[in-house]
Image (tube, rainbow, N blue to C red):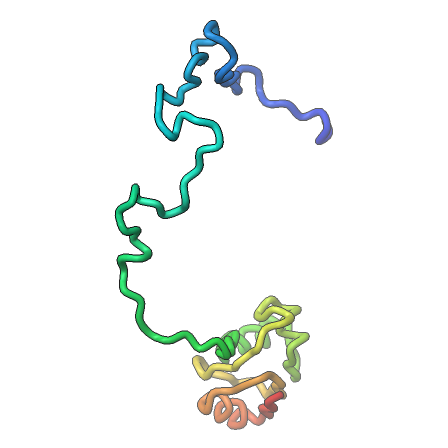
Length: 149
């Protein structure tokens, strides 16, 4: 048995009704579209969110706030996550972007910020984009080094 000769079990698949293939099919004539009106015609499509002329929901709901187009999104990594990687032997003494990407904690184009949640017992030299004050203090208290890129 190979991928090219796999078939569904006998009787597990029903043949669907062929629509608009003559009156004898039981689905001829209007081809399940009803009689008249816009939806029965070919080429019909309506805009997403169209509500028949009623003001659509995305226009009824008030907009507010401000979106900063220059905002930088950081991928947050907590200290307890780093400690668990040390415990499992995946990281030794240095942590940089390549190691974080290899362990699936960040994408290769992500900006990374180390967050201070959890406890760090290992002495690590960490080189990433940003640190919180509590994370930096915890890393240095454990004897490590926090280097911002």
